[in-house]
Image (cartoon, rainbow, N blue to C red; front, side, top):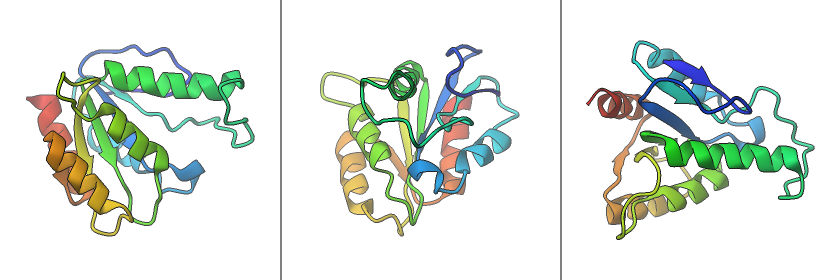
Amino acid sequence: MRHVRPPAVLAGPRPWLFLAGSIDDGRAEPWQAACVDRLADLPGTVLNPRRADWDSTWRQSIDDPRFRGQVEWELEAQERADVIAFWFASGSVAPITLLELGLFAPSPDGRRGGLPIVGCPAGYWRRGNVEVVCARTGIQLVDSFDALLAATRAALSG
């Protein structure tokens, strides 16, 4: 798979996989790298929001063009992706990932964005909320990182 990170232009062969999940201002384990490595044999493009040159001093405001550009890149990537793999790591808070799950969960009038697949282990602090959203919207929910990779591989291959 081709690997694209912000601020690069969203381009590359299909299918597109967006990696949504725990970053927590860089404190979360870099699980995205494991996804890229373990799915490298598949055709397509991985859209990884974990920016190499992220600067936590950027003002979290629509008025900061660097911050706004990052958020807009992520939203556009999820809207255009074929699959969105969500990972809620144990020990992380992942408030943006919760927001994105709510935004890209299917609604009665149709899906917005790629097919969501959610990995959420028992240790995630808001697992119950994730379980209810997935059950209510028909999103596939798995309990481990390995299961998330397997389900993502199946979705991209199918």
